[in-house]
Image (cartoon, rainbow, N blue to C red; front, side, top):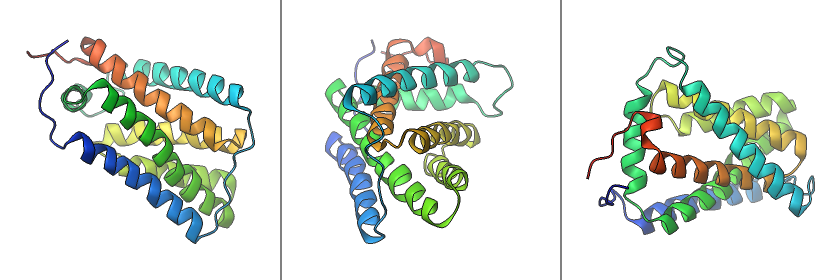
Length: 196
């Protein structure tokens, strides 16, 4: 693997940013008294379904990204940017970022946003609206917005059907870890040529 470059933001800043996202989600949940769904699955089911969901979702998005002409943007260029971002951190930091993103972003988007919308609209309106918001926050390009919104729809639907915020937290964290591992281990899959 190529040598690690200096990160644009420090490890502490990156980890702190992801932590703040989770804290914002908790504050919104508390302020608006949004009920969370936790009891839908047991511990083993949570891990099993979360891991299987992460692998299936990643595999599906990877296959879709390879369909010529499906996405109008230069996905390879975006993947090079993500590759350079990811390789600038150590593996413990990348695992920490994945876990914090899984927990924090799911608290904010599924717990707070989807939960609040569920109180004021129907379940599928809540899933769709929270997913579009998730996509907008991850906007790098139109292609990345579509992929992030798709992931949001999958996670939102899984939360709605399972009643387990813990499962989608695990799913999201595992998805991020798989995505980072594959990007760094197999960069050629994404049109990335590592530079020393």
